[in-house]
Image 1: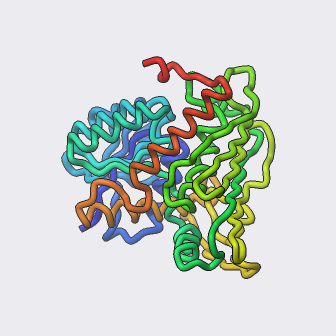
Image 2: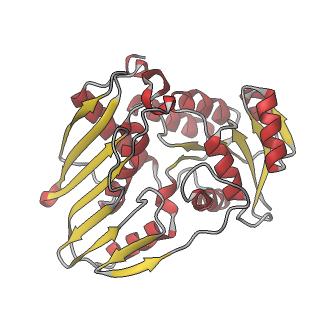
Length: 334
């Protein structure tokens, strides 16, 4: 039986996610309904993606009895309320990254999942790309020896996009881009908590972080350096340095299709999209969708590939980095 999806929000990322779902077998994945705060937008989205039902409110989607899991593609500040809405209605949820605005909100979402006995996962799609799975396998078998340093960079001039630049929309480099760098580091270091976090950078005139550089120290003098920016173009790559070699993700580290291990290239091309996409390599969203399906089939409430502990630690590190940079959101004072 197919996993029946509901789509919450008719924005750009929801479009790409819906396109990506169409690259999977219809017997495994089916989009049942879409909801937006504006019924006309929902109806236009439904028509474009051949979705049977369209709702003009999220409450209506939550009440739909034919949905197994809801993909939440709203902007960052709405993740907590929409996530709790659907989980209270006994819906499993896949929530776009960041899972929430800060650690307190993440804990609220996890508690809601536990209280309602539903599945919850942060949609950090990078974790489920074939490249990421292969990197984890190579690290586990000691291909590059003991890891000593991880570096990850991601940045582009994006201050013209309101949701990235405006404080009330949850903007800033850390929450939108730095999360990819940090999840990569924690993937390599198996979710270990860093012994120290040092952050520097600068804020733009809206009060959010424009560029942030994080230096993390882990046990055994292992290090990580993350750089993220919405004000400048960075290399957007990642490197793992080990005692016996290195692994490089040379480009698109947030949605990788190629990497190098000790100088040898490995490629994992993505399927073609049936319609134009808004973001790079978006058909790769299919991998996180399939992860959700497999978890639901096994009766799991969290993903082994993106566990709640990793989501919590990522935002905890971001909270500390924001504190050092002087970036605050209204949600921090709730």
